[in-house]
Length: 439
Image 1 (tube, helix red, strand yellow):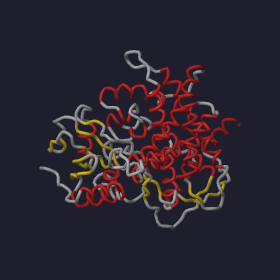
Image 2 (spheres, helix red, strand yellow):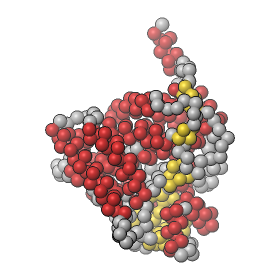
Image 3 (cartoon, one colour):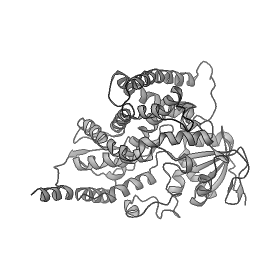
Image 4 (cartoon, helix red, strand yellow):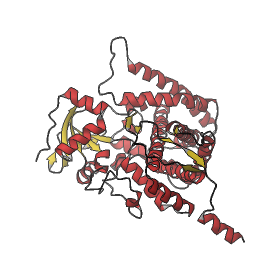
């Protein structure tokens, strides 16, 4: 049976997707069910899917059938970014990008993350309410800059200043639903190109320095990596991939941390249980809390595929070549069939339970699942663990912070406001065990 078609003018659909995306898609899901058809500029006919069965069919389809849609984040990140690649080039590039985010290297980043958190937290106004999104942005930006480039220097200071402005502007431009064009005397893409040119100049200097003096950072690993035929990545593609890591590697994680402050301060039982568990040396409840944060407050609401050839069948419907298929991340993660009472913030639902592969998809799925997912989870784990051991969060009965679009990412509207006080450090179970052994 063919899926229902949304009978709203194209202009109305474009407005809904750009300005009211979450509410717009939720209302359509409630009216039409888990699958429906939009006609949205610039993607055209778009099949929206939001249940695990259909999502599995989409994510397990071959890249020859369903590839990356255009335009996408490559408008900001560059055509040589993994976001701009498809099929075999995407597979080969992904193979080069995986090593820095696995194995022993991941654990080496933990100390760096804790150090950057504590340095930033020294500036927090204890006892006064403040928005956490900006401080978390500084923490995650410093972490990814140090992981990518190693030691500091003038270039890193330039990137600390310029990158947040570039990423914020580029994120907003990435969701503009039409191709590049001037609007009278105003061309918003010209400004994007100027930001990009400044970034390229800074990073090219860092590339040349890393060739002369290679280190153990991600940039050096990229320059030393080789494709299966022995060829290296071009400098242009290295710059594109580094921008992908820098942009995606700090904004999304910082936003999730701000949502963590918003959720935990409004759920005292969950907060107190988590603090008690951490004080006893536990890890499972923190992992479950992060899973529930990513389920209830996904930073990115959708991911998409472009149908490249005939033969993609989703729940009995053959999706025509040229259509786009939109995977509703927020929709499926709020599906009561997949998660009973989905509006409830309940970390306990994930204690000792792994989320279903195609119902919990904050990092996307299939061959295009986020390469940096493990790094993001490490940052979330280290920052939240350190924060809750060092600080006491004041709970609140204030209304939930509204969802606010920053372009690609959705953040708490007030920036995850919180009041913190320094804790008197209680002896943890692990520390007690060490003291007994020492005695």
